[in-house]
Image 1: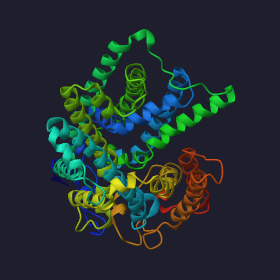
Image 2: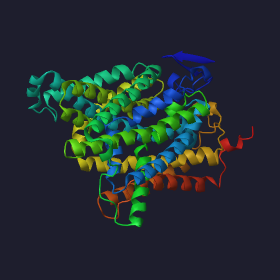
Image 3: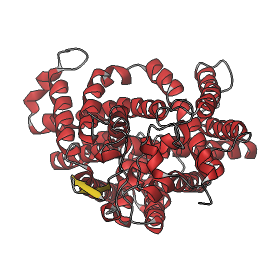
Image 4: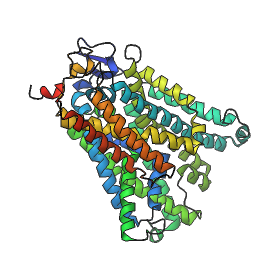
Length: 492
């Protein structure tokens, strides 16, 4: 049987426990798998084509590498991301289940709440931060259209000016209206977001080239590394930076993969959206950034500031609107959908996807993201503690699904509180997964904090790989002495 809500058709699980089940958490029915290659491609465009994505891509060309060395590093890093995304997406694609339900396989039907809460907190904080960044573009747009409104920027109310509050609340409400309309409307919106940013980015690149000429184009924006060994190290770090950039979605990509038509569709959409799209966007980014060196006398890595400096009101208006749309796109993909599902997973009887999204939005304001962004120590602490455990959770979930469960699970048991269910473990908690997360997470957090505060050599974004590897190894070691119940059904 299946049910239909918000145009997404899902399966009805007979006998599902209300504490574990609602429409949004139930498996996607075959007729509800409407995401084709383009929708997945557009999803990745929305994730990459943002002000943050632009700044990140441009920063890779300031690491002391030649242009081709940066491109090789990018290719290695993004191919690794492509491979890992396919791994984490396959269980959701196969069974039609979102990330919080996938987490039940490894952590237990109740232990999954721990994995959901950690990922949800990361999403909520960055949702608020991205909304604040988008509100800055709204502020630029308002001042361009109404120059007299600059007077509203001279006061301070809880950290924001009057115009700042207006811009932030406008973005907050505008996003909420779109996001709460359901996953099908979200799909249509992100189908639009990614491509429209390309139009403006290509236009910026063409304008820069018209000012500088092709002959003066340089892909190296900083002095080279001192030695071959140093160069290889910097290239490896650049590749790992790319993996770390996608760390959040490396957990909850299944929230989108569950709507994919089949595995071939997922792989094609991921290939176009990750290796192809990321490299093309990065090349356009460095063309524009290199052009700002010639045109404005300094490398500018903020595209909103670039369109401001061009000075043409029409360009400022079009550019500001474009980057507002771009920020909304990444907010959907990386920061809204996951916490909406994660919060719904905590209390499915009363909280569905929409209510989870509303709670996400409210909490994102309470974070006061403008104060968070203004405090480097707060960002360091947050990333060190919460970001560092994303890797171990990925390692545990992937190792459990592929190496312990052998890709075979009983879907009905994901929605039962029965002690005979495969994922009940010990009172609903898989203590082996929790212990693995505690040990690998302590390692990741410890290294991140010690590096951030310069107590030891900063391992930087290798922390994700270290945490993921440690989580997987510890979990497999703890599981080797006791074959899990689900694995026993692998031959059924």
